[in-house]
Length: 519
Image (cartoon, rainbow, N blue to C red; front, side, top):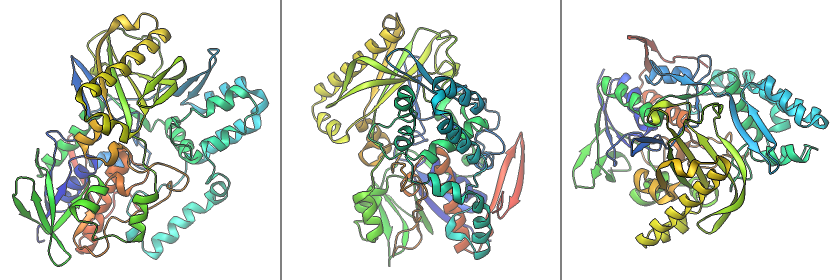
C-alpha cells in the first residue's frame, strides 16, 4: 500500500489523536506545534513545586463499558493510569450554610434531594429517572456521520427509537427551565448552580443528565497526574507508532494549489509538502486569516457571526500548605456565596467555586494541596488591559488577593498557608493555545448545539480537514480525540483504505480492522 503523507497542525488532543490513527493506517504523519509543549488546552504547568491542572474536571470514558473507553485504549491514554472516581459532582451552599450535594451515586442523590425538598418528590423523581435513561443513551461515536450508509442510519435510528419520547420532552429544556419546577426555594436556587451558568444561560438539561449518568457508572473519573501527564501518554503513543512532532514551529500559511491543500509554510519561511493537511487549532484563524475567508459558505460564516463561544476564564491556582483531609472529592468543587463580591475585570461575582485537589497527591508536595478557582470573564477587557503591563499584573494580583481573602473566611487560616499564587487570563490562553478570544472550550454548549454536527472539510478546498473543538460543539477532551479519529476515517474512506486501529492491553498490542466497535 502506498504510504501517503499528512501534515497535522497542532499537538493538542485532536492533533495527537489524528496522528496516532494516521500512523495506524500507514500514513506518514508530521505534527507542527507552535508551543514548546504538547497538549494544547489539555495542559498543566508548574509553579514553586506545585502543578496547576488547567483542564480536567473529569474524563468521560475513564471506565470500561462507556463508548469513549475503547478510544482511550487505542490511544494508550489509560493503561497503567490511576483513576479516581468522585464522591460528589458538586457541592452548592446557601447563605445559611445549607448544602445541595450532587452525589455521583444517584440513589444517594435522590434521597438527599428528597430530604431537602420533600414537596418536590415528583420533580426529583423525574430528574433521577432522566439520569437513568441517559445511562443507556446510544452515543454515535464509532464513526463520523459523513460515512453512514443507509443501513448504518437505519441501525442508529432503531437504537434511538426508545429515546425519542424522552428527547421530545427534555430536548429543549435548560437547567434554568428545570430549576423553576422546584417549589422548594433553596433547591430552586441551588439547582441553578449545578452547572457554572456564568454567561451560559442556555445550558441543556440533557447534557447535565448525561454527565451524572457517567458519574454514576464510574466512567467519568479523574486521571491522577493531571491533564499534561495524560496528554503526554498520547504523545508517547504517537511517537511509538512512528510519528514526529516539531515544537516551536508555527504554521503561517496553508499552501494551496488549484484549490487543493498541498502543504504548509512555517513562520521561518520553510515550506513542506504533503498529500493531506489536517488543522486542529483555532477555527477562526485558519478560515479567515490563513485561508483569507476564501473557502466558506453561509453556514460557516453564520457560525462565527451568531454562535456563542464558551466564555473565556480567569484561572486562579493556589498552592496551600494544608492537607484538607476529610473533604470528599468533588468533580467541580464547592460553590458558595460570598460575604463580599469579587471584582473580575468590570464584573462583580457574588459566588465562588473552589476545587480542592486533595485527591491527586502528585500535584503538590506531601501534606500540601493545590486549589483552583475560576470565573467567566470578558476577553476584550483583558486584551485592552494587557496593553499596560503594569496594570495587567496589578489587576491579576488584586483578583488573587480577593480570592485568598474569600477562601480564608470559608477555610479559616488559609491565607497564611498560601505558598504559591498563579493567575491566568484569557490573553494567557490565547497566547499559548491560539484559541479565538481565549475560549478554551470553543462553541458554547446549548440546547441548539447539543446535537449539532459541523463539517470536517471546507467547501471548495480539497485534501484539507478540520478536527478539534471548533468543529465539535461542546468541546472537551473526549470529543477532541473522537474528532481526530473521525477525520482519519474520512481520509481512509476517500483513499479506499480500510480503517485500522490498534490498542494497547498491558504490554501487548492487539489489532482490529475497520472499526473497533461497530454501529
